[in-house]
Image 1 (tube, one colour):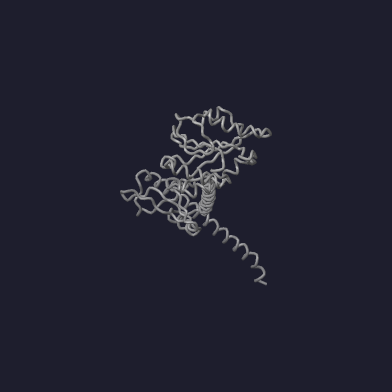
Image 2 (cartoon, helix red, strand yellow; image 1 turned 90 degrees about the horizontal axis):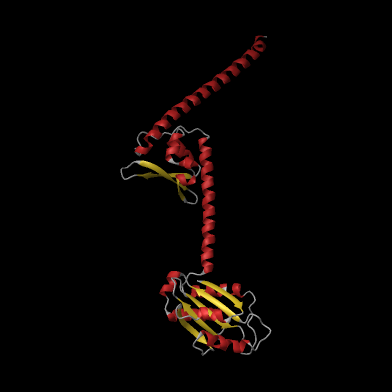
Length: 304
């Protein structure tokens, strides 16, 4: 439920807009007897004229329940809602001069309240920060009646934003682990998945009705949050993992759209293995050469 409140001059045009049978119906009144907008405006003006110092002599309130909740509320429920809202604001309905009118000509039902800011003793009601002051009573009244409040909507939005922030952070961490594992040159998808698992990331296969592997969902083991692999980064999609050179076991049946990627993976994996083998061979030869040089250096010493 949304609440709007302000103090205003309260000209006749406002009364004409609010008190309009083409827009809705009267809900509740106190201290006024008039039937038309003009008569009610003139009644309030009689009291307002007793205070010549104030400029804004009228309170204008609007209460707007959620669209679906407003449709279900009866006239009695709306009246009780308004009474509780007034009491929480510090106004006693029986002592105030006001009129409440429901506008229901559109989908969104809402209540307009025109209330004299001048009291029966001709003193002014305080209008300091009335717009802000009206928010918490609306929130508490909405909670009491089991309605959704504007504050709750804002709280939910904050929670959603925080959750999205956490998910974004998790996605970033998963992507960093993915890059870390790739730098270790895994030679197969199984090897890659095993290394990711040791870093706290599980892979959940997505299988078609035909029993073919078509992708993965990734789960952070600590938070248990799950993400579609490609939602983290496109490089984590099964197609891209295959095409960077991570073939999957021949025992796994792949979706036909991935068969070409599997062939690319096998070829790149073979090339990588040959490269790694060559590098290891060079390292061994380099170590042997260093050992031979050391032995040559020490030979004269042993011949003495």
